Figure 1 (cartoon, helix red, strand yellow):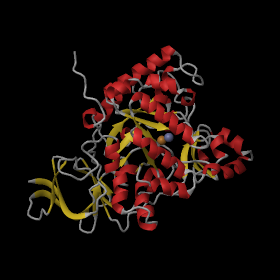
Figure 2: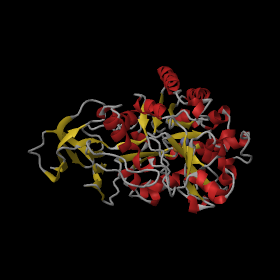
Figure 3: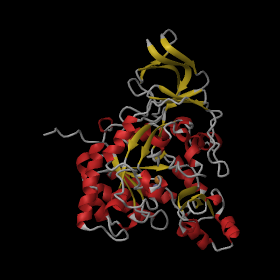
Figure 4: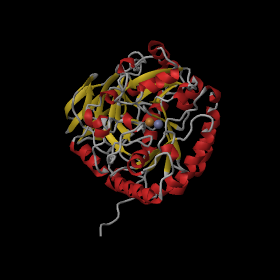
Length: 488
Ligand code: ZN
Ligand code: CU
Protein backbone atom coordinates (compact mmCIF):
# COMPACT_ATOMS: atom_id res chain seq x y z
CA UNK A 1 0.00 0.00 0.00
CA UNK A 2 1.54 3.29 -1.12
CA UNK A 3 1.01 6.64 0.57
CA UNK A 4 0.43 8.45 -2.70
CA UNK A 5 0.26 7.80 -6.43
CA UNK A 6 0.57 10.60 -8.99
CA UNK A 7 -1.27 9.27 -12.02
CA UNK A 8 -0.83 9.92 -15.70
CA UNK A 9 1.94 12.52 -15.88
CA UNK A 10 4.91 12.89 -18.18
CA UNK A 11 8.03 12.16 -16.17
CA UNK A 12 11.19 14.18 -16.73
CA UNK A 13 13.55 12.35 -14.45
CA UNK A 14 16.22 15.04 -14.09
CA UNK A 15 18.96 13.17 -15.96
CA UNK A 16 18.36 15.17 -19.13
CA UNK A 17 16.75 12.32 -21.03
CA UNK A 18 13.41 12.69 -22.81
CA UNK A 19 10.13 12.51 -20.91
CA UNK A 20 8.07 9.32 -20.63
CA UNK A 21 4.56 8.55 -19.40
CA UNK A 22 4.43 6.94 -15.98
CA UNK A 23 2.67 6.95 -12.65
CA UNK A 24 4.80 7.62 -9.59
CA UNK A 25 4.22 6.11 -6.17
CA UNK A 26 5.49 7.54 -2.90
CA UNK A 27 5.95 5.70 0.38
CA UNK A 28 7.58 6.93 3.59
CA UNK A 29 8.78 10.06 1.85
CA UNK A 30 10.61 8.26 -0.94
CA UNK A 31 9.83 7.30 -4.51
CA UNK A 32 8.61 3.71 -4.26
CA UNK A 33 7.51 2.81 -7.80
CA UNK A 34 7.56 4.26 -11.32
CA UNK A 35 5.51 2.86 -14.21
CA UNK A 36 1.99 1.73 -14.92
CA UNK A 37 0.50 1.67 -11.43
CA UNK A 38 -3.17 1.58 -12.42
CA UNK A 39 -3.75 -1.43 -10.14
CA UNK A 40 -1.67 -0.18 -7.24
CA UNK A 41 -3.39 0.63 -3.96
CA UNK A 42 -2.62 3.87 -2.19
CA UNK A 43 -4.01 6.12 0.51
CA UNK A 44 -4.16 9.02 -1.87
CA UNK A 45 -4.19 9.33 -5.61
CA UNK A 46 -3.78 12.54 -7.59
CA UNK A 47 -4.50 12.83 -11.30
CA UNK A 48 -1.69 14.72 -13.03
CA UNK A 49 -2.72 13.91 -16.60
CA UNK A 50 -1.30 16.47 -19.03
CA UNK A 51 1.27 17.72 -16.52
CA UNK A 52 5.03 17.22 -16.20
CA UNK A 53 6.45 15.51 -13.11
CA UNK A 54 10.01 16.65 -12.47
CA UNK A 55 12.33 16.35 -9.49
CA UNK A 56 11.93 19.31 -7.12
CA UNK A 57 14.16 22.16 -8.17
CA UNK A 58 17.44 22.77 -6.34
CA UNK A 59 18.26 26.42 -5.68
CA UNK A 60 22.03 26.12 -5.80
CA UNK A 61 22.58 29.69 -4.64
CA UNK A 62 20.28 31.20 -2.03
CA UNK A 63 20.46 33.62 0.86
CA UNK A 64 17.69 31.83 2.75
CA UNK A 65 19.65 31.21 5.98
CA UNK A 66 17.16 33.19 8.08
CA UNK A 67 14.17 32.98 5.72
CA UNK A 68 13.75 29.23 6.31
CA UNK A 69 13.41 29.99 10.04
CA UNK A 70 11.45 33.27 9.91
CA UNK A 71 8.96 32.10 7.26
CA UNK A 72 9.11 28.29 7.16
CA UNK A 73 6.47 28.14 4.39
CA UNK A 74 9.24 29.69 2.23
CA UNK A 75 6.64 30.89 -0.29
CA UNK A 76 9.08 32.58 -2.69
CA UNK A 77 10.74 29.20 -3.23
CA UNK A 78 7.93 26.65 -2.94
CA UNK A 79 5.75 28.64 -5.36
CA UNK A 80 8.36 28.19 -8.10
CA UNK A 81 8.92 24.48 -7.47
CA UNK A 82 12.11 24.72 -5.41
CA UNK A 83 12.46 21.96 -2.82
CA UNK A 84 16.10 22.36 -1.70
CA UNK A 85 18.05 25.56 -1.03
CA UNK A 86 21.81 25.94 -0.62
CA UNK A 87 22.28 28.63 2.06
CA UNK A 88 25.24 30.63 3.31
CA UNK A 89 26.43 31.93 -0.06
CA UNK A 90 28.72 34.80 -1.11
CA UNK A 91 30.69 34.47 2.15
CA UNK A 92 27.57 35.38 4.14
CA UNK A 93 26.09 32.93 6.66
CA UNK A 94 23.80 33.62 9.62
CA UNK A 95 26.04 31.63 11.97
CA UNK A 96 28.19 31.78 13.93
CA UNK A 97 27.16 35.03 15.65
CA UNK A 98 29.29 38.14 15.36
CA UNK A 99 30.54 38.34 18.95
CA UNK A 100 29.36 41.89 19.51
CA UNK A 101 30.33 43.14 16.04
CA UNK A 102 27.80 44.89 13.83
CA UNK A 103 26.20 43.11 10.87
CA UNK A 104 27.92 45.36 8.35
CA UNK A 105 27.13 45.18 4.64
CA UNK A 106 26.99 42.69 3.02
CA UNK A 107 26.06 40.61 6.08
CA UNK A 108 22.98 42.81 6.50
CA UNK A 109 21.29 41.10 3.56
CA UNK A 110 20.36 38.43 6.14
CA UNK A 111 19.10 40.83 8.81
CA UNK A 112 20.18 43.11 11.61
CA UNK A 113 22.90 42.43 14.16
CA UNK A 114 20.41 40.82 16.55
CA UNK A 115 19.35 38.33 13.87
CA UNK A 116 22.83 36.81 14.04
CA UNK A 117 21.80 35.07 17.22
CA UNK A 118 23.42 31.63 16.91
CA UNK A 119 26.55 31.77 19.01
CA UNK A 120 27.96 28.68 17.34
CA UNK A 121 27.23 27.07 13.99
CA UNK A 122 25.86 24.00 15.75
CA UNK A 123 23.10 26.16 17.27
CA UNK A 124 21.95 27.15 13.80
CA UNK A 125 21.97 23.47 12.79
CA UNK A 126 19.88 22.64 15.86
CA UNK A 127 17.36 25.35 14.94
CA UNK A 128 17.04 23.95 11.41
CA UNK A 129 16.40 20.48 12.82
CA UNK A 130 13.99 21.66 15.52
CA UNK A 131 11.79 23.71 13.20
CA UNK A 132 12.00 22.30 9.68
CA UNK A 133 10.88 24.48 6.80
CA UNK A 134 8.91 23.53 3.70
CA UNK A 135 12.23 23.14 1.82
CA UNK A 136 15.36 21.09 2.45
CA UNK A 137 18.39 23.09 3.54
CA UNK A 138 21.97 22.52 2.40
CA UNK A 139 23.98 24.79 4.70
CA UNK A 140 27.31 26.43 3.93
CA UNK A 141 29.32 28.57 6.33
CA UNK A 142 30.44 31.97 5.07
CA UNK A 143 33.98 33.27 5.40
CA UNK A 144 32.89 36.92 5.61
CA UNK A 145 30.82 36.11 8.69
CA UNK A 146 33.90 34.56 10.32
CA UNK A 147 36.05 37.49 9.27
CA UNK A 148 33.71 40.16 10.64
CA UNK A 149 33.60 38.24 13.90
CA UNK A 150 37.32 37.66 14.35
CA UNK A 151 39.34 40.29 12.50
CA UNK A 152 40.05 43.60 14.22
CA UNK A 153 41.24 45.62 11.22
CA UNK A 154 38.84 44.57 8.53
CA UNK A 155 40.39 46.47 5.66
CA UNK A 156 43.71 44.67 6.04
CA UNK A 157 44.83 41.02 5.81
CA UNK A 158 44.14 39.04 9.00
CA UNK A 159 46.80 38.54 11.69
CA UNK A 160 48.02 35.03 12.41
CA UNK A 161 46.02 34.61 15.65
CA UNK A 162 42.93 35.83 13.80
CA UNK A 163 43.56 33.25 11.09
CA UNK A 164 43.86 30.56 13.76
CA UNK A 165 40.56 31.65 15.31
CA UNK A 166 38.77 31.69 11.97
CA UNK A 167 40.19 28.28 11.11
CA UNK A 168 38.86 26.87 14.37
CA UNK A 169 35.39 28.32 13.64
CA UNK A 170 35.51 26.89 10.13
CA UNK A 171 36.32 23.47 11.53
CA UNK A 172 33.56 23.79 14.12
CA UNK A 173 31.01 24.67 11.44
CA UNK A 174 32.03 21.79 9.17
CA UNK A 175 31.96 19.37 12.04
CA UNK A 176 28.52 20.68 13.12
CA UNK A 177 27.04 20.02 9.68
CA UNK A 178 28.02 22.79 7.25
CA UNK A 179 28.48 21.03 3.91
CA UNK A 180 31.05 23.48 2.64
CA UNK A 181 32.24 27.05 2.74
CA UNK A 182 31.48 30.13 0.71
CA UNK A 183 33.71 33.10 0.05
CA UNK A 184 32.81 36.52 -1.32
CA UNK A 185 35.97 38.52 -1.92
CA UNK A 186 34.07 40.94 -4.15
CA UNK A 187 32.68 42.68 -1.08
CA UNK A 188 34.55 44.59 1.54
CA UNK A 189 35.41 43.56 4.22
CA UNK A 190 36.25 40.17 2.69
CA UNK A 191 38.00 41.84 -0.24
CA UNK A 192 40.97 42.53 2.06
CA UNK A 193 41.51 38.78 2.48
CA UNK A 194 44.40 37.48 0.39
CA UNK A 195 44.31 34.08 -1.29
CA UNK A 196 46.85 32.86 1.28
CA UNK A 197 44.62 33.96 4.16
CA UNK A 198 41.67 32.17 2.60
CA UNK A 199 43.60 28.94 2.07
CA UNK A 200 44.88 29.07 5.66
CA UNK A 201 41.43 29.64 7.16
CA UNK A 202 39.71 27.01 5.01
CA UNK A 203 42.31 24.34 5.70
CA UNK A 204 39.68 22.15 7.49
CA UNK A 205 37.92 21.66 4.11
CA UNK A 206 40.77 19.37 3.17
CA UNK A 207 39.96 17.01 6.01
CA UNK A 208 36.16 17.25 5.94
CA UNK A 209 35.62 17.49 2.20
CA UNK A 210 32.79 19.69 0.98
CA UNK A 211 32.08 22.48 -1.42
CA UNK A 212 33.81 25.79 -1.96
CA UNK A 213 31.38 28.33 -3.44
CA UNK A 214 32.77 31.66 -4.49
CA UNK A 215 31.48 35.07 -5.40
CA UNK A 216 34.54 36.05 -7.45
CA UNK A 217 36.71 38.97 -6.44
CA UNK A 218 35.85 40.64 -9.73
CA UNK A 219 33.18 39.94 -12.36
CA UNK A 220 34.13 42.85 -14.60
CA UNK A 221 37.50 43.62 -16.26
CA UNK A 222 39.45 41.08 -14.17
CA UNK A 223 36.97 38.23 -14.34
CA UNK A 224 39.48 35.75 -15.82
CA UNK A 225 42.10 36.56 -13.17
CA UNK A 226 39.44 36.16 -10.50
CA UNK A 227 38.38 32.77 -11.87
CA UNK A 228 42.04 31.72 -11.82
CA UNK A 229 42.45 32.86 -8.22
CA UNK A 230 39.38 30.84 -7.18
CA UNK A 231 40.62 27.77 -9.08
CA UNK A 232 43.99 28.03 -7.37
CA UNK A 233 42.42 28.32 -3.90
CA UNK A 234 40.19 25.32 -4.60
CA UNK A 235 43.12 23.30 -5.91
CA UNK A 236 45.19 23.98 -2.78
CA UNK A 237 42.28 22.84 -0.63
CA UNK A 238 41.37 19.87 -2.88
CA UNK A 239 37.86 21.32 -2.85
CA UNK A 240 35.14 21.29 -5.50
CA UNK A 241 34.69 24.83 -6.75
CA UNK A 242 31.36 26.47 -7.53
CA UNK A 243 31.59 29.80 -9.32
CA UNK A 244 28.55 31.67 -8.04
CA UNK A 245 26.10 33.58 -10.25
CA UNK A 246 28.50 33.61 -13.19
CA UNK A 247 28.33 36.82 -15.20
CA UNK A 248 30.44 39.34 -17.09
CA UNK A 249 29.43 42.75 -15.83
CA UNK A 250 29.79 46.28 -17.10
CA UNK A 251 29.29 47.53 -20.65
CA UNK A 252 32.99 47.24 -21.52
CA UNK A 253 32.85 43.51 -20.79
CA UNK A 254 29.67 42.70 -22.69
CA UNK A 255 30.26 39.85 -25.12
CA UNK A 256 32.98 38.13 -23.05
CA UNK A 257 30.90 35.13 -21.94
CA UNK A 258 32.29 32.83 -24.69
CA UNK A 259 35.77 33.57 -23.29
CA UNK A 260 34.84 32.89 -19.66
CA UNK A 261 32.79 29.79 -20.48
CA UNK A 262 35.66 28.33 -22.52
CA UNK A 263 38.11 29.18 -19.74
CA UNK A 264 35.99 27.39 -17.14
CA UNK A 265 35.43 24.41 -19.46
CA UNK A 266 39.18 24.04 -19.91
CA UNK A 267 39.74 24.23 -16.14
CA UNK A 268 37.05 21.61 -15.58
CA UNK A 269 39.20 19.05 -17.39
CA UNK A 270 41.80 19.40 -14.63
CA UNK A 271 39.78 20.01 -11.47
CA UNK A 272 36.13 19.89 -10.33
CA UNK A 273 34.52 23.24 -11.08
CA UNK A 274 30.92 24.20 -11.83
CA UNK A 275 28.85 27.36 -11.93
CA UNK A 276 25.41 28.67 -11.18
CA UNK A 277 23.47 31.45 -12.89
CA UNK A 278 20.22 33.36 -12.55
CA UNK A 279 18.39 34.17 -15.78
CA UNK A 280 18.33 37.97 -15.67
CA UNK A 281 20.49 40.74 -17.11
CA UNK A 282 20.22 42.72 -13.87
CA UNK A 283 22.14 41.85 -10.72
CA UNK A 284 21.28 42.71 -7.12
CA UNK A 285 23.46 43.43 -4.13
CA UNK A 286 24.45 46.20 -1.74
CA UNK A 287 24.08 49.76 -3.09
CA UNK A 288 27.56 50.87 -4.19
CA UNK A 289 28.47 53.82 -6.36
CA UNK A 290 31.11 51.81 -8.32
CA UNK A 291 28.31 49.50 -9.49
CA UNK A 292 25.94 52.32 -10.30
CA UNK A 293 28.40 53.85 -12.76
CA UNK A 294 28.82 50.63 -14.77
CA UNK A 295 25.05 49.99 -14.95
CA UNK A 296 22.48 51.29 -17.39
CA UNK A 297 19.78 51.42 -14.67
CA UNK A 298 19.75 51.07 -10.88
CA UNK A 299 16.68 50.40 -8.74
CA UNK A 300 16.80 50.55 -4.94
CA UNK A 301 15.39 47.36 -3.44
CA UNK A 302 15.71 48.32 0.22
CA UNK A 303 16.98 51.38 2.07
CA UNK A 304 17.43 51.57 5.83
CA UNK A 305 17.64 55.38 5.94
CA UNK A 306 14.97 56.30 3.37
CA UNK A 307 12.63 53.32 2.99
CA UNK A 308 10.06 55.50 1.21
CA UNK A 309 12.21 55.13 -1.92
CA UNK A 310 12.22 51.33 -1.99
CA UNK A 311 11.49 50.18 -5.52
CA UNK A 312 12.46 53.54 -7.09
CA UNK A 313 14.88 54.20 -9.90
CA UNK A 314 18.00 55.83 -8.42
CA UNK A 315 17.81 58.75 -10.88
CA UNK A 316 14.30 59.57 -9.70
CA UNK A 317 15.47 59.40 -6.08
CA UNK A 318 18.30 61.86 -6.81
CA UNK A 319 15.76 64.17 -8.47
CA UNK A 320 13.39 63.92 -5.53
CA UNK A 321 16.21 64.58 -3.05
CA UNK A 322 17.62 67.35 -5.28
CA UNK A 323 21.14 65.97 -5.02
CA UNK A 324 23.72 64.12 -7.10
CA UNK A 325 23.52 60.38 -7.71
CA UNK A 326 26.59 59.91 -5.53
CA UNK A 327 25.05 61.81 -2.65
CA UNK A 328 21.77 59.88 -3.05
CA UNK A 329 23.75 56.63 -2.75
CA UNK A 330 25.26 57.87 0.52
CA UNK A 331 21.98 59.13 1.95
CA UNK A 332 20.14 55.85 1.24
CA UNK A 333 22.64 53.69 3.20
CA UNK A 334 22.43 51.01 4.39
CA UNK A 335 20.81 49.99 1.13
CA UNK A 336 20.62 47.42 -1.62
CA UNK A 337 19.76 47.70 -5.29
CA UNK A 338 19.35 45.95 -8.60
CA UNK A 339 21.71 46.92 -11.40
CA UNK A 340 21.24 46.47 -15.11
CA UNK A 341 24.82 45.65 -16.01
CA UNK A 342 24.88 42.49 -18.11
CA UNK A 343 24.09 41.94 -21.76
CA UNK A 344 21.14 39.70 -22.64
CA UNK A 345 23.29 37.67 -25.02
CA UNK A 346 25.85 36.88 -22.31
CA UNK A 347 23.09 35.84 -19.93
CA UNK A 348 21.56 33.69 -22.68
CA UNK A 349 24.92 32.05 -23.37
CA UNK A 350 25.56 31.25 -19.71
CA UNK A 351 22.02 30.02 -19.00
CA UNK A 352 22.11 27.84 -22.13
CA UNK A 353 25.58 26.43 -21.41
CA UNK A 354 25.60 22.77 -20.44
CA UNK A 355 27.93 23.72 -17.58
CA UNK A 356 25.57 25.95 -15.61
CA UNK A 357 23.07 25.18 -12.88
CA UNK A 358 20.10 27.44 -12.21
CA UNK A 359 19.88 29.49 -9.02
CA UNK A 360 17.86 32.40 -7.68
CA UNK A 361 20.46 34.32 -5.62
CA UNK A 362 17.29 35.93 -4.21
CA UNK A 363 17.39 38.32 -1.26
CA UNK A 364 14.31 37.32 0.74
CA UNK A 365 14.37 40.19 3.27
CA UNK A 366 14.38 43.05 0.73
CA UNK A 367 11.11 44.96 0.57
CA UNK A 368 11.22 45.29 -3.23
CA UNK A 369 13.47 42.36 -4.12
CA UNK A 370 15.01 41.57 -7.47
CA UNK A 371 12.38 39.48 -9.29
CA UNK A 372 14.76 36.49 -9.38
CA UNK A 373 13.72 35.71 -5.78
CA UNK A 374 10.23 34.63 -6.90
CA UNK A 375 10.79 33.95 -10.59
CA UNK A 376 14.18 32.50 -11.60
CA UNK A 377 13.20 28.87 -12.22
CA UNK A 378 9.85 29.40 -14.00
CA UNK A 379 11.53 32.11 -16.06
CA UNK A 380 13.97 29.54 -17.48
CA UNK A 381 11.04 27.30 -18.42
CA UNK A 382 9.05 30.16 -19.98
CA UNK A 383 11.73 32.32 -21.60
CA UNK A 384 14.50 29.85 -22.44
CA UNK A 385 12.49 26.72 -23.22
CA UNK A 386 9.21 28.04 -24.66
CA UNK A 387 9.96 31.47 -26.06
CA UNK A 388 13.60 31.41 -27.18
CA UNK A 389 13.88 27.60 -27.60
CA UNK A 390 17.44 27.96 -26.29
CA UNK A 391 17.04 24.84 -24.15
CA UNK A 392 14.97 21.69 -24.46
CA UNK A 393 12.68 21.01 -21.53
CA UNK A 394 14.66 17.93 -20.38
CA UNK A 395 17.92 19.93 -20.57
CA UNK A 396 16.44 22.81 -18.58
CA UNK A 397 15.10 20.46 -15.91
CA UNK A 398 18.50 18.76 -15.72
CA UNK A 399 20.14 22.13 -14.95
CA UNK A 400 17.67 22.65 -12.11
CA UNK A 401 17.84 19.15 -10.62
CA UNK A 402 20.09 16.26 -11.67
CA UNK A 403 23.13 18.34 -12.58
CA UNK A 404 22.83 20.38 -9.38
CA UNK A 405 22.50 17.26 -7.25
CA UNK A 406 25.57 15.76 -8.89
CA UNK A 407 27.66 18.92 -8.48
CA UNK A 408 26.67 19.32 -4.81
CA UNK A 409 26.95 15.61 -4.03
CA UNK A 410 23.27 15.18 -3.12
CA UNK A 411 23.12 11.40 -3.24
CA UNK A 412 19.37 10.95 -2.77
CA UNK A 413 17.86 13.92 -4.56
CA UNK A 414 17.67 15.61 -7.95
CA UNK A 415 16.41 12.63 -9.96
CA UNK A 416 13.23 10.63 -10.15
CA UNK A 417 14.35 7.11 -9.35
CA UNK A 418 13.35 4.40 -6.90
CA UNK A 419 14.50 5.10 -3.32
CA UNK A 420 15.32 8.77 -3.95
CA UNK A 421 13.52 11.23 -1.67
CA UNK A 422 10.16 12.23 -3.16
CA UNK A 423 11.01 15.87 -3.90
CA UNK A 424 8.74 16.53 -6.86
CA UNK A 425 7.50 19.48 -8.86
CA UNK A 426 4.39 18.97 -11.01
CA UNK A 427 3.80 21.72 -13.55
CA UNK A 428 2.08 22.60 -16.79
CA UNK A 429 4.82 23.03 -19.40
CA UNK A 430 2.48 25.04 -21.65
CA UNK A 431 1.71 27.73 -19.08
CA UNK A 432 4.50 27.73 -16.49
CA UNK A 433 5.88 31.27 -16.24
CA UNK A 434 7.38 33.77 -13.85
CA UNK A 435 5.23 36.77 -12.95
CA UNK A 436 7.63 38.64 -10.68
CA UNK A 437 8.74 41.92 -12.26
CA UNK A 438 10.62 45.01 -11.13
CA UNK A 439 7.25 46.72 -10.49
CA UNK A 440 5.60 43.66 -8.88
CA UNK A 441 8.54 41.67 -7.55
CA UNK A 442 6.74 39.28 -5.19
CA UNK A 443 4.19 37.75 -7.54
CA UNK A 444 4.16 33.97 -7.53
CA UNK A 445 4.72 32.03 -10.74
CA UNK A 446 1.90 30.44 -12.69
CA UNK A 447 1.66 26.85 -13.87
CA UNK A 448 3.26 25.19 -10.83
CA UNK A 449 0.55 22.75 -9.69
CA UNK A 450 1.98 20.57 -6.92
CA UNK A 451 5.23 20.57 -4.98
CA UNK A 452 6.22 17.67 -2.72
CA UNK A 453 9.15 17.72 -0.34
CA UNK A 454 10.14 14.32 1.08
CA UNK A 455 6.70 13.08 0.06
CA UNK A 456 4.82 15.91 1.82
CA UNK A 457 2.71 18.32 -0.21
CA UNK A 458 4.07 21.84 0.29
CA UNK A 459 1.95 23.11 -2.60
CA UNK A 460 -1.23 21.42 -3.78
CA UNK A 461 -3.33 22.61 -6.72
CA UNK A 462 -1.29 25.79 -6.71
CA UNK A 463 -1.94 26.54 -3.03
CA UNK A 464 0.57 26.48 -0.22
CA UNK A 465 -0.45 23.79 2.28
CA UNK A 466 1.42 25.10 5.33
CA UNK A 467 3.11 21.73 5.78
CA UNK A 468 6.83 21.62 6.38
CA UNK A 469 8.30 18.40 5.00
CA UNK A 470 11.82 19.78 4.53
CA UNK A 471 14.93 18.40 6.19
CA UNK A 472 18.48 19.51 6.63
CA UNK A 473 20.82 17.69 4.27
CA UNK A 474 23.16 15.66 6.45
CA UNK A 475 26.90 15.23 5.83
CA UNK A 476 26.23 11.50 5.34
CA UNK A 477 23.88 12.41 2.45
CA UNK A 478 26.57 14.42 0.67
CA UNK A 479 28.89 12.41 -1.56
CA UNK A 480 31.78 14.83 -1.12
CA UNK A 481 31.93 14.89 2.65
CA UNK A 482 34.45 12.55 4.18
CA UNK A 483 33.00 9.91 6.49
CA UNK A 484 33.12 11.04 10.12
CA UNK A 485 36.21 10.01 12.03
CA UNK A 486 35.72 7.44 14.75
CA UNK A 487 35.26 9.11 18.13
CA UNK A 488 38.07 8.48 20.53
ZN1 ZN B 1 27.18 36.86 -4.58
CU1 CU C 1 24.61 35.61 -3.59
